[in-house]
Length: 97
Image (cartoon, rainbow, N blue to C red; front, side):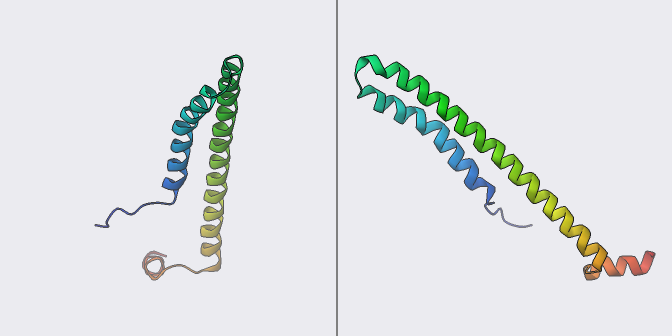
């Protein structure tokens, strides 16, 4: 049994959650320091930009993960074609093939 180890994807999730939680809080605090007439517009516009940034981050993350999975799959296919298989794979091919 292997001990649980942190994955690199947790970094993205932590940053994403921190941005999603703390940005509106900071935005409301900053808007509270502005004159009364511009507070609402600043909060609405800020939330619009925040939603666009978070949506773009999710889209870029999905595209990145799909590209990585295709690259790994291509690498595995290339290893099989070249014949750089592990000793266990060679043994099973030798027995059954």
